[in-house]
Length: 334
Image (cartoon, rainbow, N blue to C red; front, top):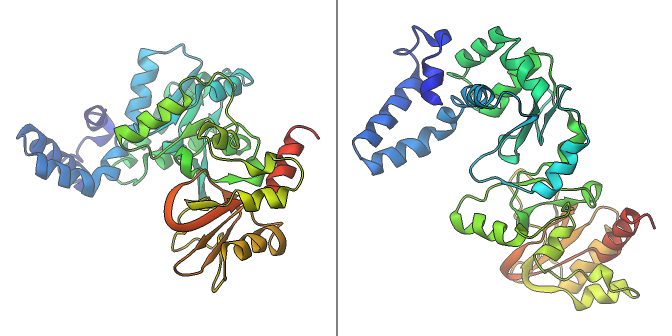
């Protein structure tokens, strides 16, 4: 696909002057010489840049080979699609309309569908871009020499074709792994159609084993049942007591707090896990979906989402069971 891009007429005369093409040539030379160490180093250093060179060509190839398909999906090799969730979504949409779907990222300058979360284009959208707007495609090929992200490059080409990301469906697409997927109040009972960052064979196999026999749409909150994590909000009466009895030892239902992440509230010098839970379920009950307490630092993390999570030594964690119960009842129409 990269070679297809490089052979496009719009890149004529740029083959020797483009830093990105030089990087690609060095990489292919290392591979041809069976120099795995150099190839891996070059790939890690410039993989994102080279990835942008294949987006438009990949779509062209897919459309040429399968010109009558109703839907076309772009997905990374570490993306897992939940077909029982995806098929009903597409079944409600008309492929003859120009649909561009995915997990919305970006800012006010440009919104675009995140490639790792899977991108869906309808037959009409593909035809509009690749058949009717050849000038737009040529421009996109030329811009692929400079654009960092292929998914943003694609979005720009679609916008020039009059096709915009439909963000009404963005909450169905997901850029995280199943155990780390942030289950927020606004998507608690919505289907989830994709997972991402399953970058090793073991992680992809684990996802396949958990979802292989699924035949119905998977809701975000279903992840707790699929991964067999206790759901204390379903214990009937005495929800607070049930939550206290089901504090998960050496576990984390909040997830890693990134340096620029101000969504998670951290309270210092909290005496116990029970006190941390009370801050979540009482003081911050309208914000908190889950909490985690660190035994060593005595930090209490209050989160607007909850995750299935996994083993985390030195941490105690749990969901806001009352809020989860209310959300689930609302999902059921109660």
